[in-house]
Length: 367
Ligand code: TXA
Ligand code: MG
Image 1 (cartoon, protein in one colour):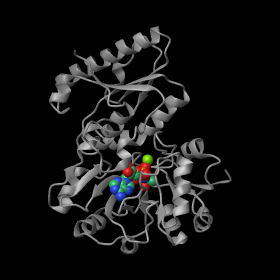
Image 2 (tube, rainbow, N blue to C red; image 1 turned 45 degrees about the vertical axis):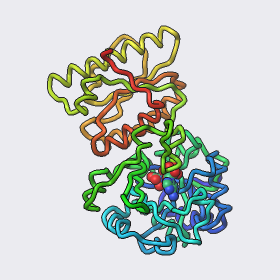
Image 3 (cartoon, rainbow, N blue to C red; image 1 turned 60 degrees about the vertical axis):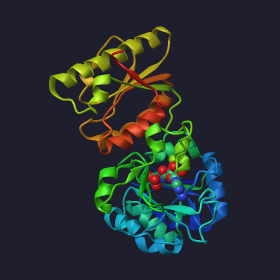
Image 4 (spheres, helix red, strand yellow; image 1 turned 90 degrees about the vertical axis):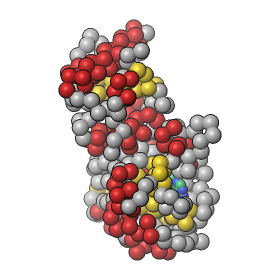
């Protein structure tokens, strides 16, 4: 690759690459995206090819302001307007009925389009300068953890795209919340930093959760409405498992004081047991814990211990998750054991990605 440009200097050049039909990786507050002209079917085909992504998995169309949405949709539901006014620019993608001008190549053959206005100064200027909406999935090789730094993009896509606009590490670290407002009832298709509670509160009504999110992808008879949620995603090369206790699950992690300490100890000793067993077989092992529990992991084993953040602050953990999974890959770790955390608020997004990375494997420490 040609150019990694830091800061505002890259904006004009990036816009020019888009106008010529090329691909530019761009920063957002969630993860890095891989951008092309959303109205050009050829650019969308190039995006799928660069990512190695199945072409029935639609792209998100990025705009620089609400006014740019009109041209892309055939109807503008009131719910969409409320959400945009409240959360844009920000980590919220809204599914709307698409206008003629949005090619089916961009929407994976659907007659709806996913639209989002990211909160990143460089990227907003870049979209404006390109004078076109920017189609952008996450800028990773399909199936790998989404990139949270320009380095990750380079690792996956070097030689396959024209340019990277670098704005350092992202803030949130997991992809945007996706809500579908085209049906009777607004439906959450992917959890992110904008929480289910915030969405319901803004709309003044219940927001349903696509059953596929909870089931963790394709299960018999459950078809996710966001096609992307059906693929094995966010996956490290290692075999990963989450570890928890029945008591913590039963109480939705709303356990504190001595009770919590006991449960934490149970999890830590179950992980220690698993680690020792794997290490005895000569495997390289990784552990993911949090600030609150790190002192419990001081056993006699080699495993690479990574502290993901403070569990009292799920955003501190989403920020680190994908970077940690990539580091384990770089270090050729073969198995990863991770603690489970609460699904509440932003925790829902964190746990959704962690469960997917673990292929839904969750072990109970006390059985
Ligand atoms: O935070 C983000 O959303 C990042 C940054 C770059 O904006 N983008 C991102 O894109 O995560 P991607 O392609 O990795 O994920 C897009 C998701 C996929 O699960 C896809 O199936 C879903 O959005 N999607 C896109 N268009 C859709 C549509 N019309 N109906 C339902 N789901 C849709
Ligand atoms: Mg993605």
